[in-house]
Length: 292
Length: 292
Image (cartoon, rainbow over all chains, first blue to last red; front, side, top):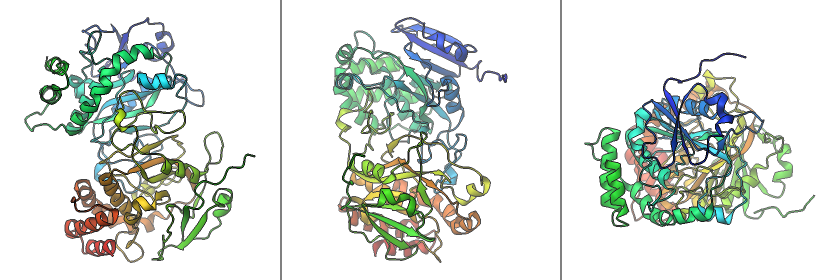
């Protein structure tokens, strides 16, 4: 067996928010062994305190998936590849990731855009239990994701997406300050929107700074569907409020005074208070949390 | 074998621009047999004169591809599925086509956007010989596309893409007047950009009218790479001019007076003359062709 030094083992932390136990790590041992793990109890405000350049966060009900030909998927190495290769948010490449092996930019792709931009986020997907909202869970309790889509792509500039925190890697030095999952735990009205909220904030700031967000590979095997009745109670305000939140994020723009992610995030917090406060007082508190 | 009536056989024409011969049709016989074929010699100005609602156009070096499990791909039926199901240009669905079997919108996808919008274009892909420009062909003569990506997706609003005419279907009643491949044959300076140009025009008009453009499945088997030296001669101006053309299309906007595709396309022709005429007198002629 060829010995290859583990990639980025000094520059990456694996963060595991857990509400169950860590048995799932047994499957990941071979892949995670060279990396430092940070285990945080879900809801613990001190979560995600890593100071490393790269973070990979994975939920405790996510197991090692296999490709259609039966190979075990080393999710972390695929995330690292995604983060270390550029993104292409300004023009769509129809053969997907132009930096993947055996792939390139197609005819008609502007040469001036082929260098790409730095990648801030790598959003991985899930086989087996898809990440559905409570109403869809209720309507389709038996639906399983069996479709392995062998692609990584950049989410185009100007397009928002639902960022799921189950299997997510990011470059903390590029976008860390915007990756805030706070004020959405027990007792807060916007349940199950912590990762979504972070995703919308991250995406508008990445778009503004010309940073890339990728989605697609790697897949993990998502074993347990959460309880749809419990989820419905957590989600119902978010599902409703989201109809105002999305247009807010679709039209948000930043002043030329904000240069860093920190500054942009503070400006965004201010705009949240101003632009979403009318929905519910909660958004003022959320804005304070963002600014805090 | 179950007998199913062929879908849309009265409402769809297959248009084949040919520069070689029609031997390739032998492979497609079982799939194309219920449909009407229009064969046009490449460069013939009367091409694409169908009056049907849907058009499928396929090049004469495109053969039937197979899935990774060895099933022959009925490309036309996949295009028809793509055209008859809605598109989702306003928000990215991370599990790709939410209308595909076994798939849906993921958590965090706004419910108000789940009806989607009508689909105007279905852009299919190519296994074996990828659609590369001449420089990439020269640099990677042996590269073959072997990656079967099992997905259909909507190209988000505001994002341009390189539309290849090799394996392309569209709804003529929705977008037909903008699907103009003209003034780019022998003796014209913008060679190998006929489909690209049409794609940029189509995409900005679809974005304006809230119509969808999909890309991904179905794959065809592209058998022959065209001569990269000949292509380089045809393309070199386009590769250069494109650096101005893309920013033009990225910022183009339409007046509220233009309501139909015809009106929008005429307005676009006027803006082409105004906005790209400084590059070369050719763009004035192209604009006249668009308006003609």
